Picture 1 (cartoon, rainbow, N blue to C red):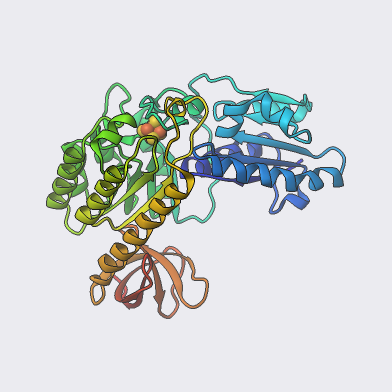
Picture 2 (picture 1 turned 120 degrees about the vertical axis):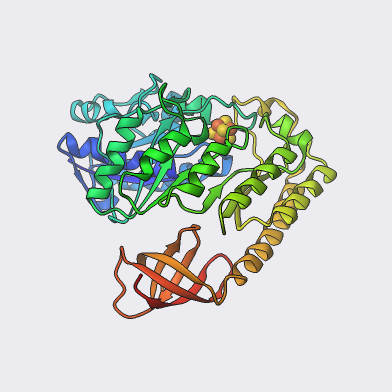
Length: 428
Ligand code: SF4
């Protein structure tokens, strides 16, 4: 039996697809390069925004023909949308055979073998997938889950409901996995969790884990995602002192209005957020700071929105993921009146995107003429190779004989906005 996994959504979903591939291969199934050659197609889904779910439904509609073409093919939905909708999704999409939430992947090999279909696997039992080897590709960058689930219940967010309560992997197992990646010559590892700053396995906290992972032998280590309420000075000190920890912090602010932050149940103020940014910039030379911004939250007034623009101007983020609010059934905010009209949400989104683009351009333009260390990751779309700085900025590099996995010193010659352009100066 051959399987194919399509992934929507965040980095945690991409890692889950690698875990699922590892599980299915371990059970004797073979991966396929395209749905056409596959007997099983699994769509790994995201529920964070309504738009993400609409895209999945559209993809499932198009897969109806794939299903009809050959009897016996199996179509499944896994991930957050599967967990949120369960049997309802099987009823809404009649050609669907199975749904499985993020805690149920261990059961899939057995279900596929017995063809016990249709089935909805949505039990939540605190699964950590210890001992499952993700099927990674590329050999340069790897993602390692250090924890799963979330206890924060931000009022707009579906994640704690679909991914369950927060639990941390034992630090020894995380460190052993990163050491193994170092032996396999991986160059860049990202530690993943919904709120990595609250990592604690009972013995070691997140700052302690960072110091242990620093000694595991991978040249670059990063982490995602941080929460301003839990980001401690010890974590920033570890970033400043550990050579492998990259100078990049993704720290979602969501809104520049304390009133909206309170409605979002984010548990920090703008003042606290700015204090962290200043501390980080004071401790870590040339750190890049990126963020998430959500506009059009219920009750967000023009004045609240202006505060968000002000904080973007003040902090000068290197880049940002920007979204407009959509209610997620089952969350607290879904009970609030969704009172910012759609065209107003779009206007606000457009405005933050325009502002952030200008800032990103200016911040990156200041790097022209400087020398940065770039890890080469892939051929660029047109000429040259595509790599990344320690600060997580993409760079198109021109140079002779560059290979994926090389570290090169690059002179920045220009920018297209988010992407730097440059030429190789010398091997470090
Ligand atoms: S910290 Fe908040 S936004 Fe992030 S996953 Fe948890 S509930 Fe969602």
